Length: 155
Length: 126
Image (tube, rainbow over the protein chains, first blue to last red):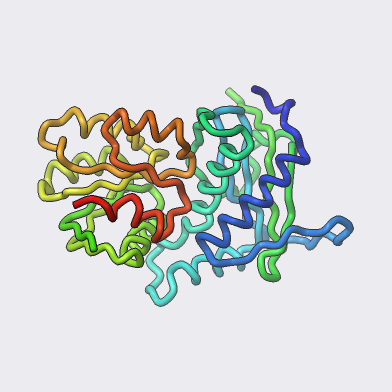
C-alpha cells in the first residue's frame, strides 16, 4: 500500500468519526464536525500532537488544538488530583487511540499496524510531507483539527 | 464479583494506566494492590521481584520492550506461566486476538477501554 492510494474523502470522514468517538469515550468531550461552508476557526497557540505510522503505510497523524483544550482534557481526566505531570500525556494517549482505531477502520480487520510513539511537535522537524486528508471540528467551543499527512524520512 | 490480589498494569501512558485502573474499579472488580510499569522490560523486572502478581494488563506499543515481546517472555518463564495476561491496545482486532491468544494471552481489549470491556475481560476469571 502507499499513501497515493488514500481516498481523502473517506479518510477525512473516518478521521472525524474516530476523533469524535475517542474524545467522547476518553475525555467526555463532544466533537462536532465543521459543516461545509463554515469559516474555519483559527487555532490560537496551537499544539501539535503527532504519531508516525510505519505500517500499513508511512504517514503521520496529527491532532492540532489550542493549549486550552489540552488543559481541559487533563482537568477532566485527573479531576480532583494534584497535578503531578502524569496528566501531560492525556492528549497523546487520545492521539494514540485515534491512530489505532483510524487505521484499523480504514484498512480493515487483520491489517498489520505499526505505530511509533506519540509526541508533541513544537517546531517543524522538516519531515512533514503533503496533507493527504484532514478533518476539522468543534470540541465544545474549541477548534480541533485532525490531519493525515505523508512523511519524508531524512537520513 | 471477581476479585484479584495483585495486578500489574503496563503502559507507557500514565493517562492510560489511570484509565485502566478506574475502569476496573468502576466495573466493580476488587483489586488488593496495583503495581505499574511503563514498558515490558520494567514490567518483567517487576514480576521477578513481586512474585504474588496474578494478573498482568499490558499495552502493546511501548518503548524498550513491547507487549508482544513481554507476553512471549512471560510465557517462556516457568515462574510466570500461571499469571493471566490481558492485552489492551488501540490496534486490537480479531486477527491480532487470534495471534495473541496463541501466545497464551487470556483476553484482548480494544482501546478505548471501558468498565464494560474490563468486566468482560476480567470478570469471568476465578
